[in-house]
Image (cartoon, rainbow, N blue to C red; front, top):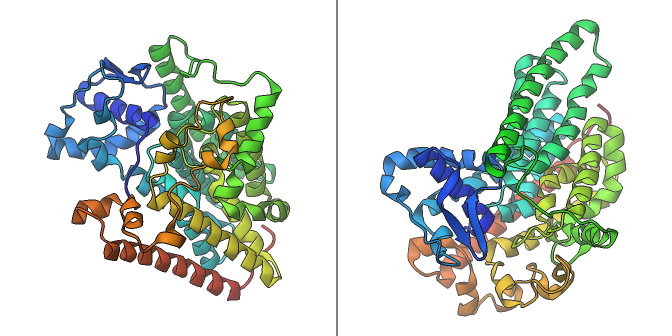
Length: 468
């Protein structure tokens, strides 16, 4: 991946992990400061912090000097919070998580009885040609939520033919990890996955029903334990078990809710239609997907409706300094699978070419977020904090989709090459030369070519079975 980009959400989560490991506490002493915010404890779920421990535990043995960190609460913006060596070494976490999402997408596609070629197409779209490819370089928790959602969904599909307690418990533990990571997993993903988990009980015989109920009980205990941990941490940090650290977070009138709903779908700065053109297949693909794969199709419908409603009522619906539709990122793999299934099962060649064209457009859009530092837009466009929250996302000037995107016109100029935000190249050569930048672009083009090759091979394979 290219250079990592940091956020205040991310460094608070990371520092929470460091303090938990070194001092065994959940609070910052002295508190952290970012602008006018005085941060005594992280308001974010502990799941992402626990994931960082996978890096920090071995790093503490290898480089204990990196853990000696001090920050000045008198400074409004202490840049050491964003840029320090320990944070840099741990920043590949989301890249690995996104790779895991692509793998689970492949496995889920196979469970849906797609051929191996079509399953590879779905995995490549998710991993290289979707907003997840950009979020691999960010430090938000959405990739981890996506992995928990897709891994749990895949396991519940596996439990259809294998009603063992181990599969159900594994799904429950993964759901528990999602509960620990973000509150939206509790209120949106758990109910949708519960539908998938309970579905086999409708046709199970008494003996099989008892086995499945035992597995569901184990899963429920895991999720319940995680929920108890979340509520307990809320009580310790905020004085109330039901306080999640987001005061005045909800829109109370209809107008901003409708604005956010439209913004999630079509606004230039956050609309998923622009940032992931593969969703153009969804209106025609979803009815057939629900009809022919009803369990997963119903889960997708429930998640779509729930996420759109939840984050339309959410006051900060754009998600801050983020890439496109931040809060809809967990839906990307399932929406991709619906589109790929429609193209694979369809009798017309134009359906596959529609998918190929949309996937190519999505790859070009994601390439912009991968190659360039789109965060610069927010400090230069002068469009933030003007008018209602999120209103700037309805202007092209406030769309990071266009930030730095002069590749088709000025690829040969030195200024264009220097604009590439390729941290790993800067580390290797000190400065990015045109030759090395072209090599990097060639590698990305080769990856896209492999995806197209898989699409063409998949087209020649047997179409997907139409019914479970």
